[in-house]
Amino acid sequence: MFTKQEFKKLDRKYFDVVLKTTYYIDLKSRNTGHTWSIYCKQLTMDRRELVVRHKHRDKDEYHIQPRFHPRNIDEAQKMIKDHDRWHLNGRRKTTMKG
Image 1 (spheres, one colour):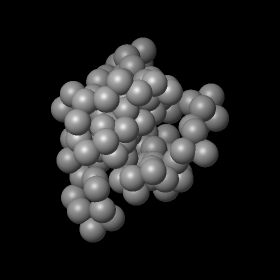
Image 2 (spheres, rainbow, N blue to C red):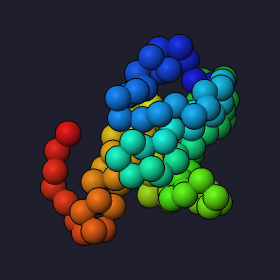
Image 3 (spheres, rainbow, N blue to C red):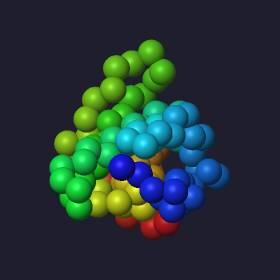
Image 4 (tube, helix red, strand yellow):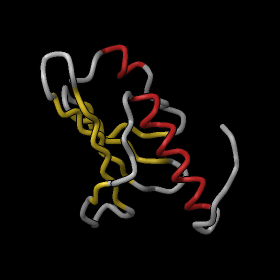
């Protein structure tokens, strides 16, 4: 489950927060308009897994990002921002930082 500290770490300048619950955070990128759903799957009391899903338009279905395996909300946001850069760069590899 997500913590209050993790909710505070959401980059609200980069994302619009669409949904925020104990187990789900849905974010919409202000750069691409893509919507991202981060699901906190509780494996045991001490272990969890974050599953990242994404869609290009509101009418689209979500699809899982199979290469995304963030350990925390900071890593999830970084992966999403990296994906945005890749998408905005014509889906070519990029080395931009930030």
